[in-house]
Length: 222
Image (cartoon, rainbow, N blue to C red; front, top):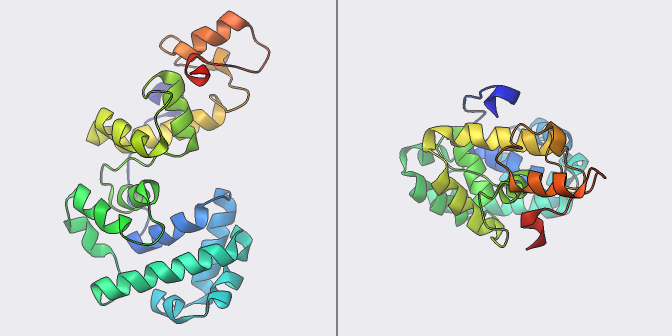
C-alpha cells in the first residue's frame, strides 16, 4: 500500500499523558471534534494537576464539543487520580523506559484503558511497536484474511501485532486506516479500485457477484 499512499515514518506526536487523554476524547466521535475538545481542555486548565482537582462538571464543560462529555470527564478524572496515586505525580514519561509488554500492562490497569488505548499511547507518543486496532483495521484485516472472521477485537490486537514486523507497525497502522477510509469501506467497498485486489479473497467474491455497491465477502459471511 505504500505505492498507493506513500511510506509513513513514526514521529512522536506528544507526551504520553497528552496522547492518553486525546485517545479518551476520541472515543465515539470524529478526529476533528476530539481535537477541538482536547484544545479546549488544555485552554481551560493550566496543567493536568488542575484538571485532576477540578469538578467533573467543569471538565465536562470544557470538552463538550467532543461528545459524551460527562462520561469522558469522569474517566479523565479517574485516570489522572490513579496515575497520581501510583506515581506520586501526574506523568507517564517513565513508560518509555519500560519493555513494551510491561508498559502496556501498566496502562491497562488504569480505569477504562484497554488494548487500543494503551497501544495508541505507546505507538504515537513513544513509537513503540504496539499496534492499535480500530474499526477500519479490524474490518480490512478480516477481509484480507489476515485474521479469522470470528476473531474478537481483543484477539485481533495480539494476532496482528505478532504478524507485523516491529519496524512496520506504525506504517501498517496508518496505511490500513487510510485504506479502510478511502477504499475498503464498511458498506460500499470500492473493490475495483483496490491495489490489493490480487491477494484479497473478498475482492474475488465481490467480482463474482457483480458491482452493485454492496458486498458480502468470504470473511463477512462466516
